[in-house]
Image (cartoon, rainbow, N blue to C red):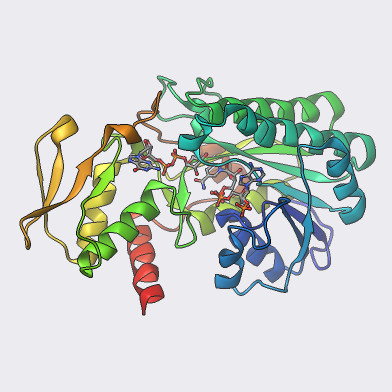
Length: 347
Ligand code: NDP
Ligand code: GDR
């Protein structure tokens, strides 16, 4: 682990308005860092500004606007901020919508990462660089659980772009000896998770249903998809630990357990006191609310992806052994946390 004092150390977080950006900024501020975050150009209020407000971070972090797909802007950003640690989180992060905008996704996720790596190589080689890699890169890999050594078989434009960024990050470590690491993070959620992702969609929709604010059933895509879901607060601790290690390397963070989307619906219903019964199968499958006799969950094939990732389950032994990292929140506790936060927001 590094010995230099953390107090006053400069950290730069691209995409600070992300779920992870908000948790990471809080962690770094607690440790005495000076934190700067990037916003993307356009719009007056960034989509994720509410996260910084919920975490009490508004005004405690410096903000810089930068288009990271522009190489000069990336270099200018590092010249201005001179970070000791750069956490690169900004990305087109929705797998589903990446099928609609593949070229934009590639620019945001792969080209932007390359621009930051070039800025480090040419002008700021002491900067330690974290890249937000993802379990989605494993895609159709037959190996379960997945490890750092598992071959990538990406199944979306998002994942293809992340593989490119991942391999570029590894290349800059190997070719130039820079401190560049990939954190291969499995799905992680929290009360700050965006509504475009299935966990928040389920929590919000079923809370609406339980409170009588929703009459129409919630339509979902693949109920059998299985994910290894953890808590974002645990995962940002792992990101930080990766940049404190003696040597740069890639690390996978996961809980090691996998659950289906259907399981997530059942846990959320339990947390809300809803009694569900599943009926039908395939496209006719639905969950009936036993108290009203009406369907509250149905399947909509328009929500299926052109290529799906069936099961993800990670083996984080390397991070556990070398970084001392382990998750502290299991999925039932995470669901309770998300439901409780959603209820509190509604007063
Ligand atoms: P979020 O979806 O919460 O936020 C995404 C961030 O990227 C926001 O700051 C957003 O800005 C910005 N952004 C969105 N689209 C673009 C774009 N086209 N170009 C540049 N910036 C953009 O992200 P998470 O916190 O969930 O994830 C953080 C990072 O980790 C991402 O790179 C994601 O791909 C990766 N990751 C996430 C995992 C997870 O389970 N959460 C797992 C593995 C990897 P704005 O506020 O303006 O919308
Ligand atoms: P994912 O997260 O694609 O894994 O990417 P998401 O929550 O979108 O999907 C998880 C699984 O649920 C299935 N699903 C649905 N998904 C959404 N969004 N909406 C639905 O209605 C729905 N019904 C079923 C999906 O098909 C999928 O199998 C997230 C993002 O944070 C990425 O940035 C990150 O890299 C990966 O997690 C790890």
